[in-house]
Amino acid sequence: MERALNPMRASSAKRGCQTLARRCAICNKGVSHGHNVSHAENKTKRTWSPNLQTVRAVLNGRVMRIRVCTRCLRSGKVQRAV
Image (cartoon, rainbow, N blue to C red; front, side):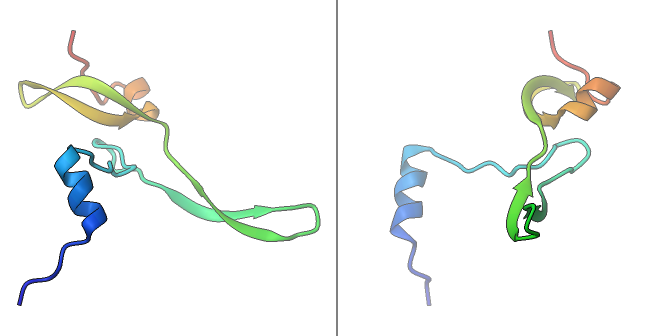
């Protein structure tokens, strides 16, 4: 039995829209979860996203566009294409 497709997803797929994972392609760093804590010690959920930059990089001899965190860029783990 086939599963029914979500109409919202199907329409976005037709338009070519994709949601990108908030994850570094090199070190696999992703979103962290925690709480905002107010002065009254009230806690609300929040997330910390990595600082991802889209760069043209050389991977396996080919130039590709990847999303990389700034720590990997700064430390030289990525060879940028010129």
